[in-house]
Length: 202
Image (tube, rainbow, N blue to C red; front, side, top):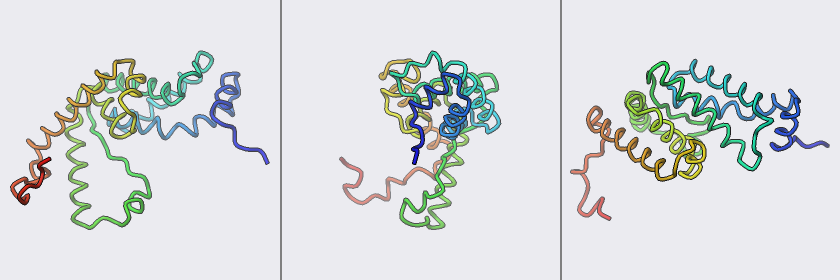
């Protein structure tokens, strides 16, 4: 019984012109590329356009791909650059969406209470509005760290900047979002006056 080809096998075959191998790579990576593009552009149609362009560049550039680097890093680099270009060309129209998997509630252990669900929807609406205020690079760093789960060193490799710059962008993005929530959505900020004696002190 043959086993599914692993990623390096697919890359080698696709680089040699095997279209079926390339189509399989696209199938495996498309969701990740579209998701990252969507979180940065804030617009679904733009994200689909970005993804189409990304895979065209991948197909054209596989022969020059350096296999010493992770394929995902290369994909993120192409995706982020294309998404930022799209964002700048069309304007920062959209916001971040919290993308939950179909089994998110099961992973959490139980379906959320109605009040908790309302709170979550309110937070998501706030992010939709406020993330549009982030500079494109800040937004990309925030997406890669908080949504895609990359660490600072991985993001630095994707964006071609220093890890310290990544951390600075992330700190600024978090500050802007936090201040925006405090200013425009004060109801989402925990009321510290309700804490008991000694709570919140570390």
